[in-house]
Every structure is written in C-alpha cells, then in structure tokens.
Image 1 (cartoon, helix red, strand yellow):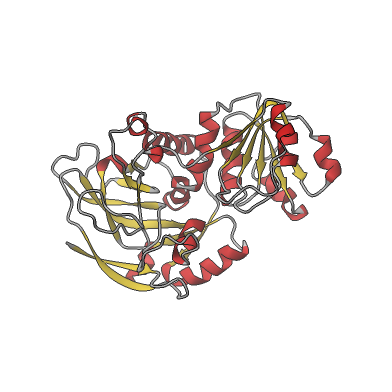
Image 2 (cartoon, one colour):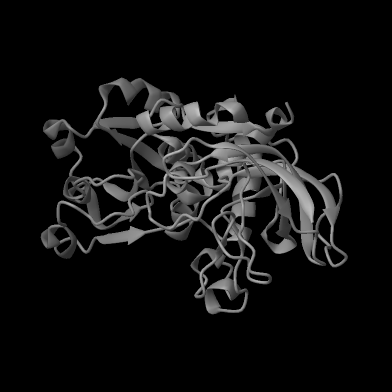
Length: 350
C-alpha cells in the first residue's frame, strides 16, 4: 500500500480538511499517477455535503485529474513512466455488458465505478478521488494528454467538456445546424466553444443581461435573454438542438417552443424532477425529442482531448491552492467563478 495525502470531507456539515489514507499498489493492468491538477466540479460539493444522500465519509472528491505516470503494472502496454495522463469520472466498469462493449462505459448495466465514492470491483475498497497527491487506475480508464494541451485547463475537459461534447457528437451536430446553449456556466461555456468548433451557429440563452457580452466573447453568434418574452417569441421554431446545462429546476416549455420540428432538447445539468410539467403539445405537434446525456465513454473522451488540442479549445479556469478549497466551494455555490476552479496539487506539498 502507498500512503496518500489528500483533503477530505469528514462530515456533511464540516469543511474539507487534510486526510491521509492508503492507495493500493498497482495491479498488473494498473497505472500509478502523480496528480498535478484536479478540477473542482459541482458534483464534488454535492458529495461533500451529502446533498444526494449517498456519501460515505470520509470522502476525497475530485474527478477531473491530470497527472504524470510514476509506475505501471506488468500488463500495461499503452503508458510509460513519465507520460502525462488524465482520469475522469469513472475508473472501472463491468467491461462485458453491451454498453461497455459499445464503448459507452458510462451506461454500464452494472453501474460504472466512480472515481470517488464507489466500491472497487476487485477488492471492495472505497474509491477516493483527485484532491490527493496520487491515484492508481486501470489502464483502460486512463487518458493520454495530447501534445501541446494546457494541462491545468485540460482537467475540466474530463467532466464539463465531455458532458457537453458527447451529446453534440451523438446527435450529429455539424455545420449548418443551429444550436441553443441554455446557461452560461462551467458546462455552458464549453458547450459554446465545442458547438462552434463543430461548425454550428450558436445562440446562448441566459437570464442575465450581464452575460450577453461574455457569451459573445466565448464565440456565441447570438444571445437571447430568456426572461424577455419578446426575444423568446422572436426565436420560435428556430433551432435544431438545445443543449440545456442548467442544473436546477426551470421551465422547459419556452425552449421546446424554440425548436424546429424534429428538434432535440438535451438535458445535461438537471437531475431533479422536471417542474413545471412539460406540455405534451410542445413535443407531439412538432415531433420534438426531449433527451438526456451523461458523460462520454473512454474512447470518446480521448477523442475530445485530441479535438481540444487540435482546435486550441480551453476551459476558462481559476487556479487555486488546495488550502483554499473551502472558500472555492462557497464561491462556487454562489456562482462566483469563471468558469471552473482547478487545484494546483503542488500546493498539497506545502
């Protein structure tokens, strides 16, 4: 076993604090990684505060991990010591069900093993995440960092990036399509950049006048203030796709009305019940689709990293020290971040 330094949540009502635990020695197919950067996802906050009622304490959050390989198991063929790599939201799956065979491990019929907060499939140990100095992961779930990519801003690509890229690719967004992006946060700003790079005409929907210029700065062709009924009426039956990144309950009906016939509204942020209710008219009379999407599989995530390196797409980040994580959580809850915190894990050695 290898002693690991970290920051962990010890109870839902307590701040994160220093924590030590043991990582396993690499199995034959494992890659051991020194963590250089770790993104801060809103899911980390939910887990730390047990908002979903599934947290086991103490828990080390973090599933947007970038690091350097320090050791490999005897059966590892894709990575060598010194390679720059990434680890996203999952570190294992059953690997034999149909979704796993199809390369969409996030839909594993047995449930994928989360980077933190899951039981390891082989030894039953509890997985702990990237707010730590090292991690050990099966080769299959390790990603190669392409040459030239900015390592710190690449960390959120492993969650926020792939969460927006996967549905754009799955539903075939391409040049000529009109895409609406609802929300301008960590997911939304990546959705704008990625949809634009795929050739789409992109419109940001925001409730805040203050974000109009900001949306344009990120490449949006148009901005609609969704609280303005006149602006919403002007874009009725306009869009091929809506990428909905808003994580709280909101009325979907006005956005469905903005879709063309056969248009698709994709939820990537909302996990709660949909309220107010969907008006069936908005779906039935235009053959519209209301869909959902999770993260992407390993192959697709690697594709995204390579795509971002090729097109110089970066997540906008604010780098912090691990000692400032509780302040970052407070600011994140208030929406006071543009657009993702990333921890420089060198600060853990301080």
